[in-house]
Length: 353
Image (cartoon, rainbow, N blue to C red):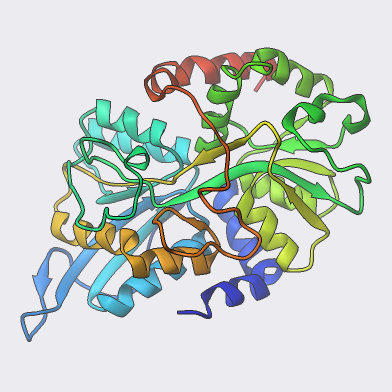
């Protein structure tokens, strides 16, 4: 298990990047990681859970596979089928399936709490208080236990140092004329993290819609998900990107000329929560999966894959700030949920997307 991170880093340009790009460019149908049968059963000795569950996730495909591999070390007879896409498209898929009574997902693992609050308001999530919550700050999970954060993913500034000589220190710097035509960012119409960032920044003192107008004036390129930002930076198409920490730091570790800046104003953090669907027919297996992710072993796997763990006492990967070191830019969660679609529509109008 300790080899997971080094394997990913060594393969990031050859394999991991391809998986990430593919996942961020479009949808993928549920794929099986191991073999198993539908439903919750027990093995022949009556002690090992057996069955199938379906995970909907916005994680890069290679990361989801790595996590499932460690899960299957404990539960080898549980099949995890995966549907991977951007958070916004996953939510649309879930809502469409709910309307036709054909919901396939058992577990969701997507970008941010605001997304899960919306699903909670639609009465789509099961209330489940995992026994593995010790060491996780209550601010990182729902008081009604319909979802729990699994990691801390911080959006900051990724810099291609072959292109940019003067490295910016804050988000406000990105509107300076010297950085015109050099910036790329993910679209809030596709990426849940980007949608969260939008709703927070337009309500942050000194930023607001004027900030996004400034980015537009600097000819910012709006891609799809974070994978498109990562690709543009590594390929030298752009010199600066608003990018999640793990993608920038993995690229740097793989040899790309990338530096990651935690902005002086603070970081835009999402926790990629996990939640169980209320209509899941595989709830017991889903609970096992949630418990594993939140356990110390699951959090160690999360760190080894290359994320800041959310559980206290589990060391962060090299180059990542810990939860205690990150200044979190955020806003009232109810407002973020209620205004999310309005914010996205305003963004679409501003950028003609």
